[in-house]
Image (tube, rainbow over all chains, first blue to last red; front, side, top):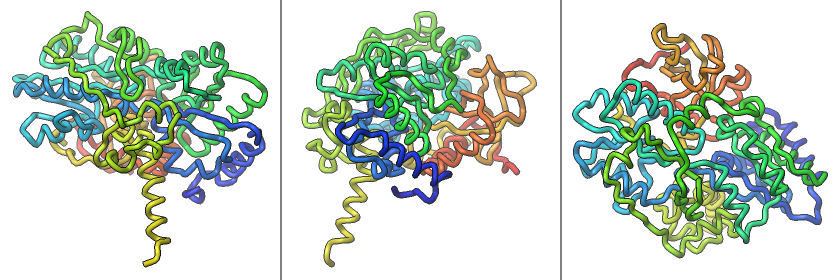
Length: 376
Length: 112
């Protein structure tokens, strides 16, 4: 493991790793999915694979909102922002994400009014300071960011800000997990549950995974020790033949979630009948749209949005990687046509996508080792 | 800082998913949802609207997502979270993110 000396509790890390080896049945192969992109990033960054026995396989899940966003949604937003009276406001994460004719940043270079905001409320401030223009906020994220957008909508209505709207791309994690479990080629033994999403939704929404699907799930923090402890908790349940929801990240995640946040979401958003996910296809009731009562602040109800659909190149095997059928490097395009600098598929788009994480930490390391060991 | 600046985007984790710890310094007299929060050495306006059931007071630590405090945490957990961000190579991204909060309304102040 790369950074073992830097860890807060190297002895605890070693202990947890030993516990994992003790609990793992050598005659069994374990497939555990970490749902959240933040966990994927941490797993690669810390080199956690190196401390796990070979029969524990971590499958990287769909929890990176930038990765799963279909390119057509970016094209749609850029089409609205082609109007010189519209300001395109988005988080910095969106700026380099490619649309069919380039990223928002490239559109800015060509003259589009594109601004980075750090918080959706900053987009409201932008609207106030640009009364002649319309500010469209490109909203994205799972339940972690949806409450902030919800409160921003409530404030826009209360304050009567009329030159502001939200292009809503919020998605919800539970239907994506369901889609993965329903997939016939998917075999999983348990889940490392998302940390910050659970701060909002709490632990109850995962109970069906334990009760109906008989899979254990452990809500987990982002430190190396958190991840190893969660794996210990999953293996303990599997050894006893149990399937429960457990919360390893109690220091941040309350079992009931954040009620004020859930209330704000319920007040401003409703479920879309279906939404497309890059790599997974259409999933029913998996995304949020803005309620009719807030139509004035909904880009999609207020503007002509073209509804562009862009199919990923067939050669990109994002769906198979998402479901853990293929490892990132087994995709035909990995590291060749598809790189973090020039992403073809969804999972290479953000540094939290499993292909980008694998590329940045494993692929580059392997290449470095090859170049070091190659004779001069 | 204006929204025009900061177009240079450093790699790191997905910033919107970052949870950044901060210590509440002051609640605005005219708005209970607006707080001045000390975050990674800067004082920034943070929205407390999502903690209306469990309002933080000056001295409390919170975890912040995209300018909104999402949960109250202990000081020890706040320090641990900062270390986690450093270990993940995301502390620079966190600083940039926090620098952006509040659009022109607050100035960088070095916290002691």
